[in-house]
Image 1 (tube, rainbow, N blue to C red):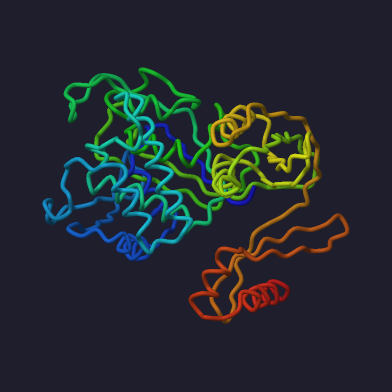
Image 2 (tube, helix red, strand yellow; image 1 turned 90 degrees about the vertical axis):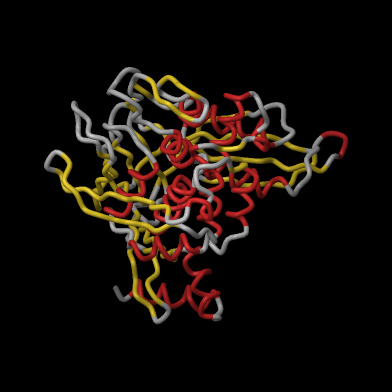
Length: 396
C-alpha cells in the first residue's frame, strides 16, 4: 500500500487547513510557491505562519489577493475554464490529474444541486482564486510527499446556517452533502460550517473512508496540524494529518477480482478507465484480448481491489464502459514485506521500493514517475537513472 495520509478530521476540513497541515508535514513552502507559479495565475501572494491553537503548535496558510480584479476575485469561474487552465499549465501530470479530479468532483456535485450538466457549472465561492490555489496546492503537496493512499475519519458536519452567493444556506452546504456521499459523517456535531465544499471535494477525490478507527498498522512518519481561521468553543480548530507507511508484513490478504468482457467500446477509453479505477483505490488494473461468441474480438477488463470497494469499482466500470455487467470473485495473495527508501544518486534523490522474498532476496523498484522526470530534466536515458537508483539502493 506504500505511503498513507490519514485525515484526522475532529474539527472538519477546509482547503486552507489541508494545505497548512501538508506544509506542517514537511512540504517546503518554496516548492509549493514555485509549483503554484506554473498555474499561470497572478495577483496574489502566499503566506505561511506558525500559531498556537489550544496549546498545540500549528501552521496557518493564507492566500492574499493583491489585485482582486486581475486575479479573478470572487467572481464566477466556469468549470471548463478552470480545467483548461490546469491542463495547459506546466504542472506535473500527476498534479494536474489530482487537481482536475478534485474540481470534477465539485462540478458533478454542484451540477446535481442545481440540476445542470457538470460542464455548465460555474463556481462561485469555490471558483475564487484562493480556493483554486488551495485545491491545486493540495494536489502539489500530496505529490511532493509521495502519498499512495489517503484515508479520512468520520467527518463532523457542524450545524446552523451560512450566507453565500445563493443566499442563506443550511450547514452543511448542499454541495458538501453531495460530495460526501459514501463517507462516514456526524450531523449536528459542532457549531457552524466545519466541512467546506473545497475541503469536501479534496476528501472525495483523494481519500477513502477509514471507518470509525484509524489504521491499526500505520507506522507513523510525521504529524502535521493545519489551523483554521475560526475559534471554536468545544474543540481546537485544527486539521491533523498523519503520514506513515503501512507495515505490509508477509501474510494472506483477501481481495476481489472484478471483470467485464467488452466487445463494443472504442479502445481509446481504456487508458482513461484505468486511470479512474486506480484513482478510486484499485490495487491493479489489466486488459486481456479474447475472442467471444460469433468470433468477436474483445477485451477482458480486470481489476484487483479491496472487498470494501466492490460497489465503487463496479460502478465505475458500468459508468465508464459499455459493459452492462461486472462479475467478481474473492482471491487470496501473499504479500512480501516491503519498505520505501530514499537513495542519493548523481541525478538527485530517488524513492526506491524494497520488497523481500521469504528467503531474503530483495526486489528493488525505483519510483517510475520520479525517474522519468529526472531523465527528461537531465536529458539522459531512463534506464540510466534506474540503474543509478538500484546501485545506490544496493549499497545503502
